Length: 182
Image 1 (tube, rainbow, N blue to C red):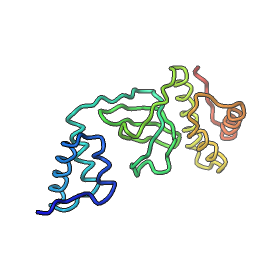
Image 2: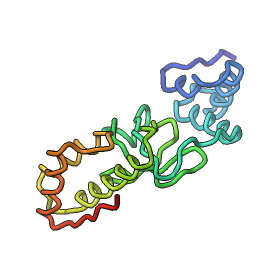
Image 3: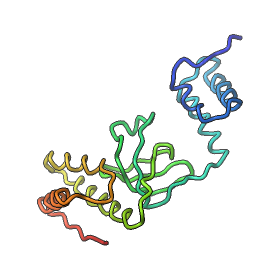
C-alpha cells in the first residue's frame, strides 16, 4: 500500500503541537477514518480533539475574565479578529465569551487573556453590557455600528473623554439608561 501524505496545510495544522510519535498515530487514524484516502483537515482535527479530551489539559480561563478572540482557523469567528469579550462560561476545553454583538463559544486556543486587574475587568464587563444594550436597538443609525465596532475592538480598560461622551450621547438618543456600578 502506498503511503498517504498530507496535501495541504489544514491537514497538518492540528498535528503541530503533538509529539512526532503522536503525529504519526493521528495521521494513520485519520487515513483509516477517511477510508484509506487522504483525510480532510476536519477529520485530523477531530482525532486531535479526542486525544486532547483524554489528556485533560485544564482550561486556564475564569468567569468574568476579559479576553481577545483569535479567529485563526475558526470560520465561526471570521471578521471577529481583535474583538474583546467577557468570559461567561468555562468548559473543559472551551469558553463562551460575551462580545458586544453576541456570544461566541470557542476553544481555549482561540482566546488570549488581557490579564487585567479586578477593577479593570469590572469596567470592561460594564462596558460590554452597555455596548450589547445599544446593539439591541433595532432602528439604530449606522453611526452607532461604527462606534460599537470601534469600542468592541479597543481592548483597553478605559474610554477617552470623547468616547465616553459619544457613548453616553447614543444611549440618551435611544433612551437607554445605565447606572454605573463601580
